[in-house]
Length: 590
Image 1 (cartoon, helix red, strand yellow):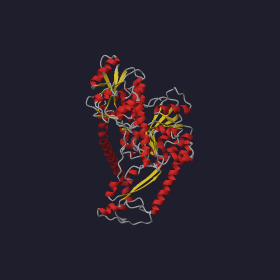
Image 2 (spheres, one colour; image 1 turned 135 degrees about the vertical axis):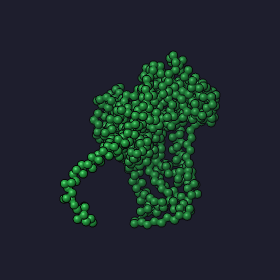
Image 3 (cartoon, rainbow, N blue to C red; image 1 turned 135 degrees about the horizontal axis):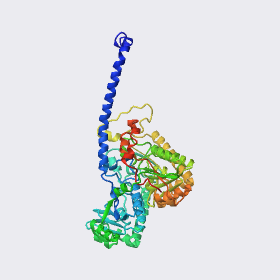
Image 4 (cartoon, rainbow, N blue to C red; image 1 turned 90 degrees about the horizontal axis):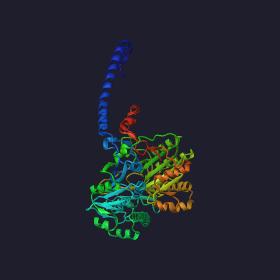
């Protein structure tokens, strides 16, 4: 305790003298604070100035322009959570950006053709089908698409995208591994045995194969059966598309697929391409075919910037598009990881987006785009509940499935009014899996002994050690509860008899085509089909284009820097969005 007669106790005497001193201190503190703010804001302001000046002069679209596409840079379903603008050359091109760019070019009189160079891409089979639908619509306007296959090696999926072309070139040194489809799945059990690590895996459903690579030494008959069925659907889609576009019968296409690797000349002989050549020859051919005086190419990113409408706009009835992509988590990743924000399907965040769209009276229907292999059952059910609430509030909800909507990816979708999938979408996997590893033998092998102290039996059940019989029993009980919750929702939401659900569940994956036959989805198609179905079910004019709102809302880099961690600074910088430019090209009308 302090001395009451010392300086701390002299409050009465010092009160009269303290006021001027406090005033001076306050002034000094204010000056220091202002200086600190200036020192902090100066680099930010300089950074903003430099970023703005990276943009250069506005891009214009000249008459007779050729839209240049390179699909290698397409990543993700929707726009990134953070708009880094010109900092990284205009930002990455998402699938949504690409589709809207192609659509805009189709209606643009200044664009006369598309030149596409294919070296490979990050697209899956279903997303490739999505892109092809938009390229086909472009070609139907009478504008040509010329493609150059220019990778060191071209695979089936890359060539599948090339079937959008009116004419296909191939570089003379390119090898074409257009040789059918394969799945390679490593099994780690032998390695785990050598490391004295014991996998403890419980799978609900004969076909639930997520834990097999750790538990088994080889693929089970169930896993093999389901994968072969999906590959067969994809094979049919490929062969049918190639045969139709290249005017070959299916047998001729199958014969070419037997040859493992084709040279550029053999690709021509098989009828898969038209000429061997280089990009300048493709450009010269396009110049002649379109009748323009000289070749004027415009990069897809630059075109998107030039034709960006800068926001959802419009009034009256609207539609919403909510993106759910990546493994399912219960909660969103930290704001400090903006690159991951829209690449992880965080249940609470996606549910909040759906609820925001639900609360907007002008939004009459919600299209939910799902591309997820699953994950958290809790996070999945949070999203399912939000869709259930949206429908109870009178909103129409239609799900559009992308490359994969399996396990939790299907859980988030099943409560919708309708589900649309591509023929090659991997869907279903209605099951539950639990995986942990017993590291005790490994630790003993390397000379480490693990000691444990528990307040209750089973307190370390999820630790490094083994699962005892009672712990396994309780975990299995929980898994059975989750499995019955999952299948029960499928039966109720999809109006399928419970016994039938049990037959088609079991953790099995299905192609979109097969999922349609067994009632897990309602129609085949992409986002455009989903929008048309949403309008139909919401009683909207099928021919009218409605303003569209995208969720999650894209933030500028400055809004990210001054996120909730910085408190009220965000509100002071809201105006930066207008300075940094509008939203993605896709915030248009559907």
